[in-house]
Amino acid sequence: MPYKIRRTQEFRDLYVKLTKKNKSLQVKIDSKIKQIAANPTKMGKPKTRDLKYTYGSHVAGHFVIVYMIIESNLLFLYIDHHDFIYEEAPKILGNIEIEFPELWAVMSPDLKHHLKR
Image 1 (cartoon, rainbow, N blue to C red):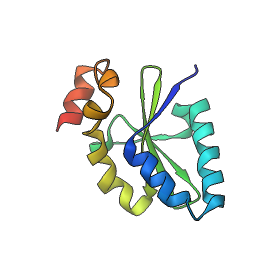
Image 2: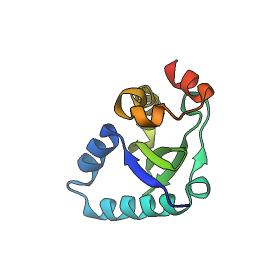
Image 3: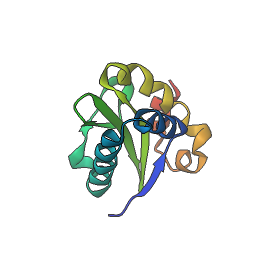
Image 4: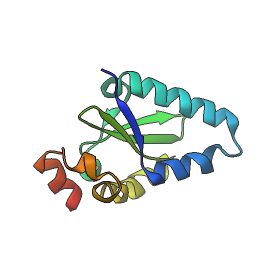
């Protein structure tokens, strides 16, 4: 199933910051994004607690890409060093309603409730 790729502003900003001076990391991240897009449920590990309903996939050893699947959309939420991901990524989930109202409209009530906390 082909997914429409979406990225939060935070993901885009961090991608630029991380890859600006590190082209080899950019190649690895781009490759991982393609792998995730081809098979998102197999490439990532389902997350729990504050990141419930998301997946995480390690890239280049120390970095994690956090994403979620919403119908036919693959939403890349956050990318950063694994030491920071679990603290910062949940904050991004609360912004989905504002940044992607069209995705918010099709989310399940359970998912919306989880994200509103």
